Image (tube, rainbow, N blue to C red; front, side):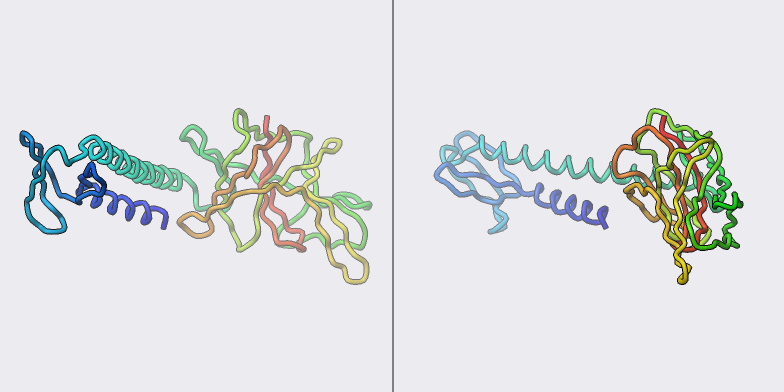
Length: 256
């Protein structure tokens, strides 16, 4: 839609630039296809009357006319540049998408090369111990407190020199996804805290979500995701989940 709008503006600007406003010193102007100065006369082709006419040179404000032509030409060039930049951006995006595997997961393009992120193994930590979280068969929980954790205090997937990293996520199901900040712990990082409500068995999940932009890409289930604001140094993860089901998939990274 944006590209169609730019093209429409470019077409209108080009059409408008084909005609010229020939300004008169006493005020007003004639819309002309072209004009030329011959001795003490200005000859012009009138758009309104579809014929050649002429007026004394002393009646025409040539400076204002030429300034108007220059301004319109600059406007046309800016729109043309915007169209060219839009086309290049679309081609670059297409080149990136061709590099992304169709397999579910999280990916980045760094210096033109594909970087594949490994799905981190998550465990559910309760007062009875730790149990590996399985996406297809979530861990049964009893009322109380728990936490979803991943091992290690620091990610093995550092991102340096960039604080608004862009990721591609290929979903394997119609689920929610986003970027979260991981909470530090001793030997672990906490992905989210859980509260299982007695009687209703409702699960309340608490995670530190990052405000993100998302863009659906051509293809089935492929999205681009990136933070709205710069990320502070620390531990983060791209996650895919269904609220209330405790079925997180986690791809961790750190901002160094």
